[in-house]
Length: 70
Image (cartoon, rainbow, N blue to C red; front, side, top):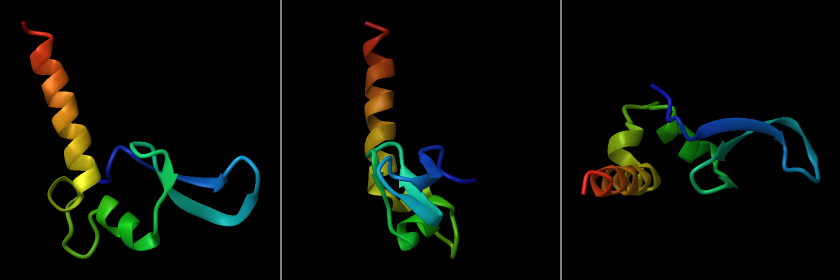
């Protein structure tokens, strides 16, 4: 399963690219193709296990959900 924060963009708003590039919506930045391999769970990686960005966002989301129960 691909990370829900990964998308591919063909422009950065100022420049058009000749091919789509991986973009992390959690950080608001383009990521390297190697990072995108983790996001796409390739090569025995898992974004839920191997990506510190995904883990931080998931932790913040869980903390926010718990906070709404008070």
